[in-house]
Image (cartoon, rainbow, N blue to C red; front, side, top):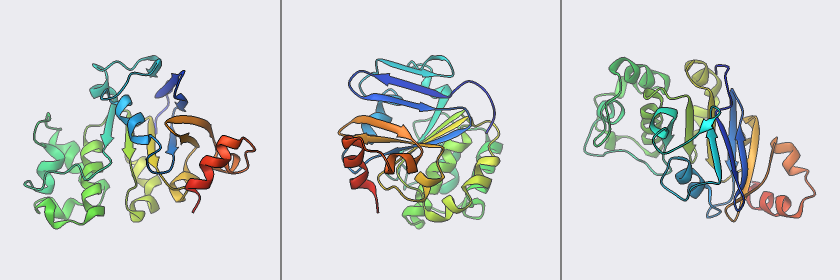
Length: 221
């Protein structure tokens, strides 16, 4: 990832703080139902505003969101009536991406040879890859992934990231302290909608803070 100002700095009196440093992958970690998706919705302008939310040293206002970040939504987020290529390059109700960027994105996630197939032919993991490719094709500096991707993708995540020189930061929301959390630069632990601590996963696991310990008990395999 490239060098520059921090992609994301969030502070809220009621919901805590979260930072994604330049070139970092941060995991928003919490058990199911603890508010991860509500945080993501607020970041993309669909939920309650934070007291302060800056991206690249400027307020992340709703009008800036489309130029700053791209989102892989929690659910499939695909259009089953369309093929893989259309889902990535020109999904309904959204501006089309550059065709070369879309082709590159499909190559990065390993779906180039399935571009013409109906997206309904793919399993859950494949449809998540389509959503990731669509987000990559937008070439925004901040990537937000709400939910897990298939394990094979995580196995070559470093090489995938190296193929995106425009990317400055990644935020992944997940409910399990698994491989992606251990790979992350830091983990923001969320409990009942509040980020109760952020740091390397090992430091959160060793924390004596009662709320951090309680949150970790729900997400540790």
